[in-house]
Image (cartoon, rainbow over all chains, first blue to last red; front, side, top):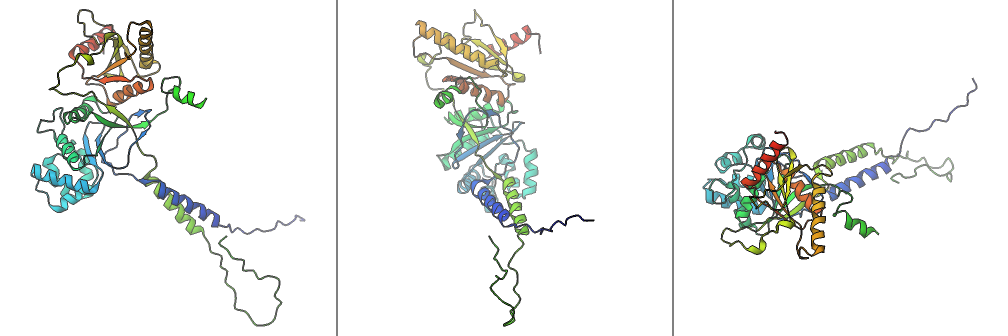
Length: 218
Length: 195
């Protein structure tokens, strides 16, 4: 047959450009992101139109999951160390240095004081199993109630770092009383200003909040 | 870019000294690209891109030792009371419901559009009209009292505070629910056919 021969082309593709792109993206993601903090529970926060960004440092995070269990954390490792040392002293927890260190490098804590020693002494798998079943930190509406362990945590944390900004990260399904206990505890320590962590949602058109944006465009 | 032209140019003629065989400097970059994308995937999955957004909230200052100041009392005509209840229902009435002999008309709505947003907008217009007509002083603002019931969820709570910022309500307070308000909810539910 007299079919014209098609010239064979090399199947070798130059990967250099692709390699460049891959590493460019890699360096972008390394620099622009930070690692997810490990959360003991999954929390789906409700949405709001607020655009205030949470600052990086000096955060006290009170997490409430859908069942109303309360978890507590602060961000700085050194302050966490100071906090657990104070707690050890006040509550007579008899923690060893190793157990206190494991608190300092850990994440959110949702353990009542009477189980603290066994919790901090156990390994990571046992801890995450415990976090799934724990009842969370006991809370109450009054700071004078000795069972209100969250009040103890908040006071000691603020003693260790007075600049702490208080954030409540609660699940939308959590009942209001479980959040109200926290708000009442904060009010007991004369804290009336705090932040609620929410997802961002769009401002509904035609409302008051949408108006300044539209007039600014004109 | 990363390759060098190793093909000898046309300048050389054959003969002369036998050259050592030139090895190609071309490197197969495919594994490197694979590695790059693998790391990208790893970083995408383990890191957070956006910082969490927060809403700031100021609770009313409450001190048991502080005497109740008459100045901080809310005027009936500027007030709108919102009660949050189960199944994301919102009950509301005008005023603060302090007059026991003349109970306010309690209505029920929800968070869907128009729902509670329309109620707030209407109330705001009404207060503005009263200010213009001189019945209220210009310093008076629409005041919303939010009273979440025990069976409301945190989502309702955030939604209603969000409605405040959406509708530009500057004065609002989160107040504990009173037994009277609970009765209002029960009565309204009974009037609407139960559950």
